[in-house]
Length: 457
Image 1 (tube, one colour):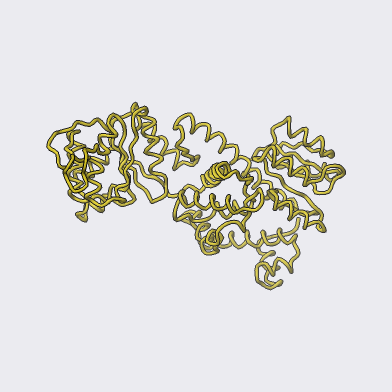
Image 2 (cartoon, rainbow, N blue to C red):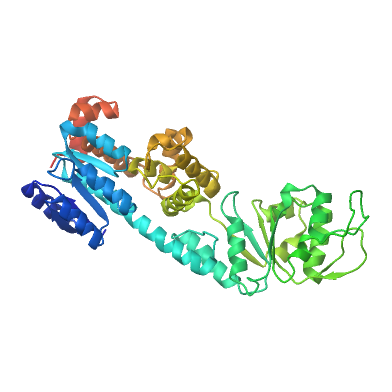
């Protein structure tokens, strides 16, 4: 993973060794013993990650951290500190450090932490680039997705947008179906005409019919004037029918007629009104199953399902979660004039691995809450709701990332080896502490170390 790393440490010998380790791992490294020069370099050069010692003459690691967070909030900062200064390192984490490591440390521990920091930095860069692309292609729709699933959706939008065909968007609640419908409208020749949205599940059948087709004066109690419906309001533009699977059989018949003939009659009226609209519909139901159950008209289903776009749930596009989280953080920090600028590494680990049953909508609500409730400039793991940190959910999410076809015995051994290695690294290979962390005996830990050939070297 290529990246530009800036290292600041007044111990020159330590600095040279550290530079060599990182360059051997493929990183481009600038190593400086003067922190003032380091900040000047940061101003003049592209830096992905800063690694700084905590105690240095002149500026401290905390000074470097504060300067970087203020001027380059997208650049993660890792703190190096002696074992006896852990309290200051924890304080640095509170104000926005990505991670801290205690001297002396194992190369494996440093490289693992750095890999996460570089991944975070690249995510921030991609997020900024994607937002620029979004503004260019889709205006304010804020569609974010770098993974194959969302790239396929956006490809469908590009191809279907310019056509006149009806589009059916399917997927779980909270996956962003309305955003996609707006993107289709903005990618069409109708983009300068009205985009009208109707939530079919929010209205009872009688009200929905009037809402869609309009009504004449006196057609029912309270109809004191003629009213144009959403079809007429959307004339020349796009009508988005959300939760289309909830409409009654009577409304289905009338909707089918409009789609076939491009004409309608207002409730209580006899005049035929012509409309030129493009319909985009969405549902979280399996409409084909609804047709088989007799709840949805088959002819209407095929009339709506000319072009079908399926929205993937968030758990199937985990590579997009950091991008979305960073976007919502920027959005709500701006709206609330908040100083929150980033996630800690631990918080992002939880966010990235959670199941998100409520999809993007749930993620957005959680990030908004965190921005409002966070104390410092960084969202910490303790700022997240308890359910995000639930161990059972975390295990389930981790398992979902594994391939469906695998060698169970070999996979379990790999997982066990990884957990033992992590405990040893975090405990600086102090076996008693690592055994306590894993809740096993020291002798059993030693057996597993031998089995998996785990050493401090």
